[in-house]
Amino acid sequence: MSRRHALVTGASRGIGAAVALNLARHGARVSVSARDRDALAQLEAEASRGPGRVRGLIADMSHASAVDAMLDRVEAEEGPVDILVNNVGQSPSRNFLQMSDEDWERLLRLNLLAAVRCTRRVLPHMRSQRWGRVVMIASAAAKYPDAPLVDYAASKAALVSVAKSLARRYGRDNVLVNSVLPGLIRTPMWERAANEIAAARGIDREAVFEEMAKRVPLGRYGTPEEVAALVTFIVSDGATYLNGAAIDLDGGMGGALF
Image (cartoon, rainbow, N blue to C red; front, side):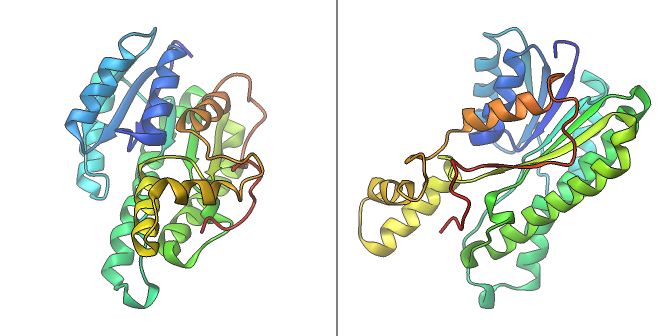
């Protein structure tokens, strides 16, 4: 992986940051996009202690012009992308009947169209060199949607569908496209969700985590590092026959998140 250039979107913290660091530890040159400049600086500093490196770029991935500008800079300064990890996204919890068309469109621009735009941009290079890896960071919600995450779940299901379509089309070019469907992973997203549940029920946040963890056969939340380990395997030369897969990473939970 030492000669590969990876791009991880939405990587200032949580799963994205863990993926970027793990790829760097395996020797990749890693470009990451996010909106938090301080978090990106911290990520770059942490990665500097390993064999690879991480370079952060500020971008609001919900806007096509910002995506294009970020990709222009990545390619100009670091070269074509060999590995793309589409991780950027938001997961607001809200009431379906109170959501406007604009709410739906705003989330789909970030959670779905950012991945479409990035993938469309990097595919020609991957095809020409007959080697490429694209990973969609979806969610267990793509298979087991819940009412509070209706638009989030829909966007993640769409990512899985796009990945399967692209895998069928570009597999012959040795461009492998797969999805990872994390379940209960202790990330800032689930910290926010636990805070909301705790406030609504008048209980401690850690009690929420303990209660939710009981639904997982392993009895605990997963970690961003465990997701990163799976992504690193998927894009490695040890996974050359893995294409079009949608891999559950949920500790055996296999059900709704809420």
